[in-house]
Length: 288
Figure (cartoon, rainbow, N blue to C red):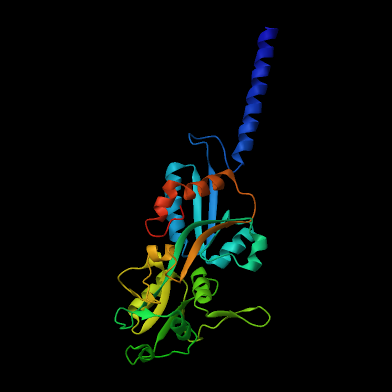
């Protein structure tokens, strides 16, 4: 009887120990309670240009790991940096290079894809090719009429993105609309009367429906509603972005600010895998 009681006590202690251990695992980002051995939540916040791609990648990842939730949020590339600084996201999504003043906040950066920024005009526009200098002069207000570019006698309607947008940052820097003063402060020379839109989709819709308008969108967002002009004689495409002949291009980047969870590490490994990069290739330019 004594031996039986002793065995029972040992069994209860073992069961209690196992319960405590399992309870502790439940608070971790990762637990071993499913066939894949992975659970938790991964948060990505930042560029609205990267957001649709992140959503596609997240859906495919969650199909493989159903106990992991991947939350994708927008807000712009600037918000991506803020999100990792405030530790409210695992990854900040950027559609431009990390700025010098942001590097202190960034622990790692991973280029997950490449993209071109297409300069688009209303389909009725007769101008089909522009130089970088001409684009700069349009956005700074030096060129105001399409006739100055060989087009119709019509005032140019300029459409741009909001401040903090990675697409705007890449566009203004490459086209020299973004300059620096003698103190090194950035100055965006985009004309004050430009129509400002909060997303790639809004820019595209505005240009598609506004006569004599010009804007810029992610290469992956191009469709028949707008016309992409050649830049320096080169049309925007995956091939011309990769070979460097198309001048307005940029990286899509995930940045981290601290050590990341196992679930987050498995997610970014998936993104960079052959399977993940095949998803990238559906609309953007893979890096592997």
